[in-house]
Image (tube, rainbow, N blue to C red; front, side, top):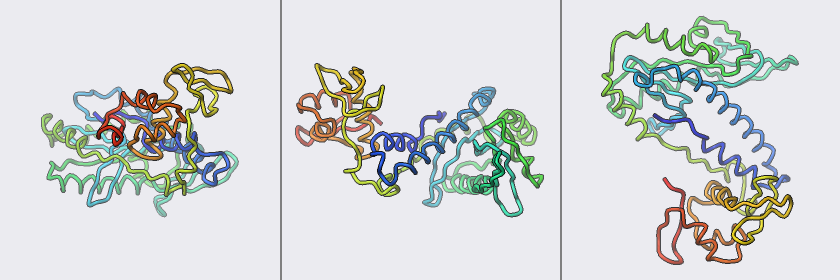
Length: 315
């Protein structure tokens, strides 16, 4: 089962928010995008409560699955596999009154103050995901299975307004998700996959899962020089912390930590390079000794010899 973790995009934006100076031209848009992505993640996580009701032996549940079809990557918030059908779930965490206009394929949000804002049509999104998944199954020569789609509104206070019968069938609040799944179970009585073949399909999906390659430097016009080095205090976010007697000490609030450098190393991997040398860590953390840098990297996988040794995150 593909568990729901913190998406790489959010991890990268969080690292940027920590490391960019406040006056950087892209700082505000990064903070805004981070807030949007976190709201989306909270919406997806709210589904987990209702998905727990499903029999884990009969349902294969995947989160944030990203596959490639015809050289085009596509991602699904949640994918559910059964022996009878597959279900793609697109989660939206949007407050206010939502008008799903199927005539013009648009979603309009009306806020409490009466302002309107347009969003991409989620019905078009899941329809595209459905086609991509069908193509992927064909390409991989895997058993074809009926694929259903569902749009789930995570915010319980959201008011839904729609002008088509399709909307009522393919759209619901999160608390109605178990009911919708039962409807699909009653609709698809014929077994298309044996349990053995379904589990083989689940393993293939996990094997073919493709992580997103996010180049934030191009997207936000960031150079290596923009990224502030040093160890950031986990308590007050001041930097750089000083290395004193085997621990990190904050000059601002007095916090002491033996592990504060771990976040700095992870930030380096997220923002600068997937690999780091002893010398690069020495400079990035502002260490006085290369031997200290070597000790701080000892827990990571390494390759190369002596001065050419590089370290990376565990796979």
